[in-house]
Image (tube, rainbow, N blue to C red; front, side, top):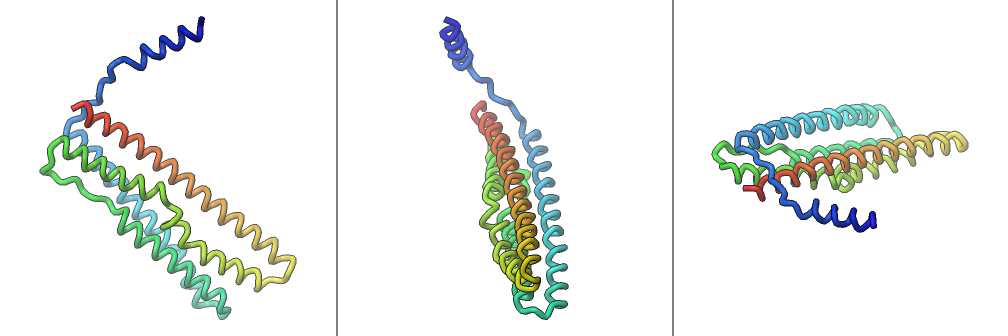
Length: 194
């Protein structure tokens, strides 16, 4: 009996009309501007975050005489360059045009959210995978440079740390994609209420 009552209550609750979220063009412009600044700062952090290891890898590239280490450092620099290029090309912030009406503002802002969501939801092909060949080569060079028992432990520790960092970056971006999806859903509700 209690289950029947709960089912009827749930049906009554679900059948209630949903009131859409009302948002003015100015409110959308403010949110879009704040989002644009967030993306600008994220990209700047990523650029600096890629530049620091690239400079370190370039320094190590010049200092080492081992060809495998040089190839590894060069590959890591190329992977970082690809990552930055892709982020700049696909993930740069776009400014909301001033002349748009409220419904067009919502569509533009939603499109920007979707573009950024798709970018962060798919970090493996453009953010993490370009670094994998360099890390594999570095691991091989590291394993070759050290004596036998030490190299296995060192390689396992290094690879474990890199794998944990990659996993953390992937989960962080999945969480960001979920947050962006919630904003997109909110904007759909706003559009449907007009």
